[in-house]
Length: 300
Image 1 (spheres, one colour):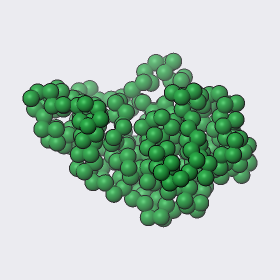
Image 2 (cartoon, helix red, strand yellow):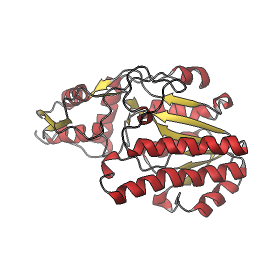
Image 3 (tube, helix red, strand yellow):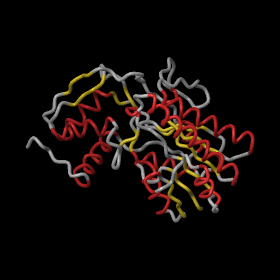
Image 4 (cartoon, rainbow, N blue to C red):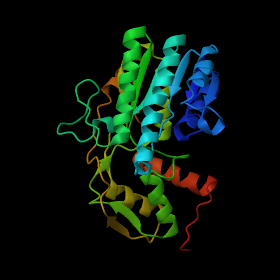
């Protein structure tokens, strides 16, 4: 297939591009770092018009720590809503299947678990999640009006080689290698279904192999919730760091518990589930940091 990947130079997008190329697909990269602007409707339209059959729309403003001002909020909304609108417009116009990288953050804080794609009403806790949910609805709308093929994938928190420095997993590793305090927000009891990048990418690329996934929202996430405290403790242990774990002011608009059903992924994506154990994923991440990023145990 000829497949366009937005966010192709990013953490997730880069891994997806590599997997697609290894499988023999023709991949069209589209990333702001290489001149591809989602806010340029003509640019994305021209790219999709050139025989693209499938678009993996992964690009987004995904760093929650960057939405601190009105200007930050405007850019986040523009990229995640208007940018997604431009991608959906091009896919509908040129009859390409749109696979959208959304987020499990759209569920926010819920009273009942596990959260299911078709039974849990989204309850975003902050602007980023609200913009991703808005993107989902734009895509549904183009599907309803113009018969555009779509699949929405909701990702949990992803970690592993290539991960963004803003992610808590990276922050904790960085602090541990430096022997600095590992700073945990609030009580540290909040948890995440942390998912290793290889497992996520496997789920993503399975989507186009399973056309029965069209018209569905699908959670892609590990099943075991890991608390921030456990994450800090395990990273400290794996690095062998003398760091102290300290608790700082809680992050505003915090989601406190994650527990997502993956039954639809198992059914629609050929039995997919996250196979990488938390301990194995952390060790692979530490190996990457030392091998490729030059991390050393600075207290030794």
